[in-house]
Length: 155
Image 1: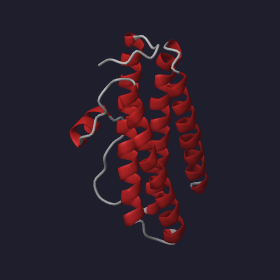
Image 2 (image 1 turned 45 degrees about the vertical axis):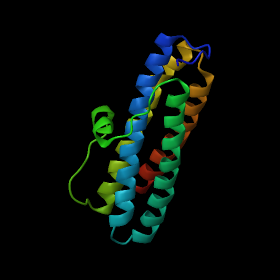
Image 3 (image 1 turned 120 degrees about the vertical axis):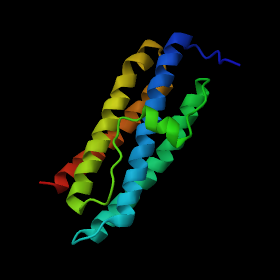
Image 4 (image 1 turned 135 degrees about the vertical axis):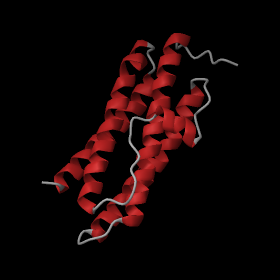
């Protein structure tokens, strides 16, 4: 049954399309961050190991919020690696990069998620979808702050 929540179907369709991409990007960034947590080495091991754990935990919790918003709009949330692979803008990598490259890759990942989230804003505004706008605002704040903190480690 389609929801009757005051958001026109054409707007819900566009919002859903964007949220599916956001969910895929967040999933890929979560996996990358968790991988780096497991595999980081070097003089910054303890700092990065703990920082990555904080970051992947936050990303893990965000996945549920994004998927539940998709469901609230009346759509199934993607949940397979095949679906996520076809929707994400992030790149998978082979091997284990050095710590500094991990940091740069995570900066790139957070910035990609920021761009994905920003691309959803017009559809959410058009549909007067304040709930999605709030979710996006929160996600943008977290990803922008995380990207800034990671960039600061590279200076």
